[in-house]
Image (cartoon, rainbow, N blue to C red):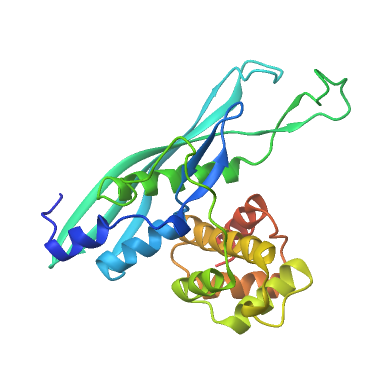
Length: 260
């Protein structure tokens, strides 16, 4: 059941979203929209509830049907996940349940004739695992939104995309529990190179590393929450599993979970 929130927690959950936390993504056509990364939402929940909270996927399913440009009539269209955010406040438990939906993306068929100058879609999804992760992530953010996190987020693409700095990367690393030597080692293992220090990152490098660390943290929290971010990072370093993209990070998290 839910519980009344104290003034302190209400203030923490409802505080204005800083511009530095807002990311921008392309939408349909020429539209753009703002969103909050799951890693930011998780940090806000930690600040509000002191880590005394958990998230689980109660059920999930693949919705099948016709996909424009994809052969067949029984293709994965989207993944739907029902997530539950559980928290404890003053010794009293509370929950929030919300659905998250993620559209399934398809690989391009480069062997087929181009349509309007582009390769058509094949019948092979890019990654159902990534779609499940995306649906779980959206369910978590919806649960957090019902508590007040990100309710003030502006839509419509009016705000400029914030620039990520080396200080932002250090803040991300600190908030998820990775010290600088582990971050550097992780970058070496995954990308084959790394800066001498986080402070040495330029704007472009900071943006890439910040997004990478947030993807690692998001995959760990949604796919293998029983582990710590440090344990997952150590696995990536030791296994040298491909982890340059969100899809590869999700696959590595699934392999890590199976091996535990």
